[in-house]
Image 1 (cartoon, helix red, strand yellow):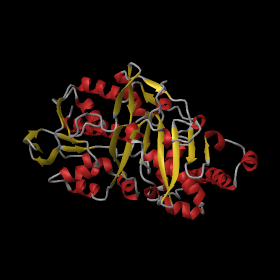
Image 2 (cartoon, helix red, strand yellow):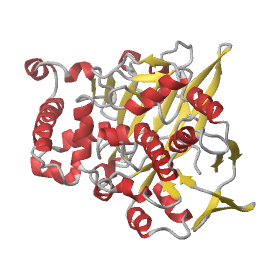
Image 3 (cartoon, one colour):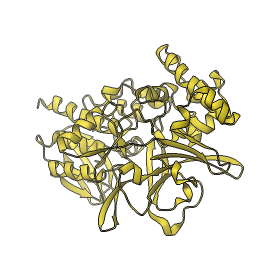
Image 4 (cartoon, helix red, strand yellow):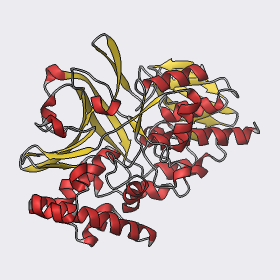
Amino acid sequence: MGGGVAGLSAAYALREHAQITLFEREDRFGGHANSVEVEDAGRVLGIDTAFVVFNRPAYPNLSAFFEELGAADRQLLSGFNFFDLSSGLQYGSEEMDLPEEEVRARYPEYFQTIWREARRFHQEGRHDFFRKRTDLPMGEYLDRGGYSEEFRYGYFILLCSAVWSVPAELIWEMPATTVIAFFMAHDESGLGGRRVDWRTVEGGSISYVRKVLAAIDPKTRLSEPVTGVREEADGVVIRTANGEERFDHAVLATHADVTRSLLENPTPAQRDLLAPLRYNASTVILHTDPSVMPAGRDRWEAWNYGKVTVDGQPRTYVAYYMNKLHGFESETDYFVTLDYPLEVDEAAVIRRFHYEHPMIDMAMRTAQQSIYSVNEGPRVKLCGSWFHSKQQYWDQIGSHEAAFSSGKEAAAQLLRELGA
């Protein structure tokens, strides 16, 4: 149940051992692997709107899976750009790499503060991580370190909202350990870091979804939401609007809050695990309106972190320049914006989506300590991006790698119990 990457991963691992039925409430498979195919100058461009990039060191299982499927990828050569639509201030990869004396000579105090504290944060964060001083909410960690408002709202919050697709006000609840571990595993610029070999799936992520579905060849039940899951001694009963069906085993590859609502008779371990886990919704728009970007095209990067003052309050958003992200040439500029606080020209809108992401707070990170034990025994196995990737430890949560790895692990646990 659930045709996103976690469900596809589990089904793929079980394909030679079972007859598989794949339920999906939407009218398509893929979940956050959601490409919109756009006709452009006589060709079709697959433009991703949720999962877009990966790299081999931080996505080892997913990368190996793509290679096994024969899903081609493309190297992404770009950086990041920060810009403030209200003040006109902007800076990016090149400015953050400048020596201090040049920053002092060329830039106002506001940016000098950001530059100094960014350097300090990445240095101190690494030391604190290894000294086990980061097991607290991010806001408390920054308070303890005396970090300025300029750094928090002009740098830090922009990076984090892009990486984890959460609104600014929730960043402060994230575990400092998780945030610092991400930057240590990538580089100081996170998404947009030029020292990371970022890649995109050739033709959009829809191309790998099609390949994996062909390999599984499941019975497909699109646009058929599951409304209840009941485990019994000799099987699992799945309920939809069309009635009840019995299966030998089930993999519930849905968001934690959905999983919580579907389980009619959860085990104590399932109930305790799911109780504190939360989700957050984001609005994503694929469009061609350049007003979301800074005026100078020479500043446009793959990752563009924007800030604008609305009703006296600073609001942040992310604008992905898809021409650079996917590496194609076009007379049309395509953008994907995440939680843009102003209005996008309706005539330029191609598609709108509402995505939900796990809220990575202290409760979710604490759950990772024993999360995989929940699948030991019951006929209903759980997986999703709210599990961590075992290869990446507890702080790889919420990513495509985490979701894929959890589905693979759920299938492996089921096969162990079946002696297969």
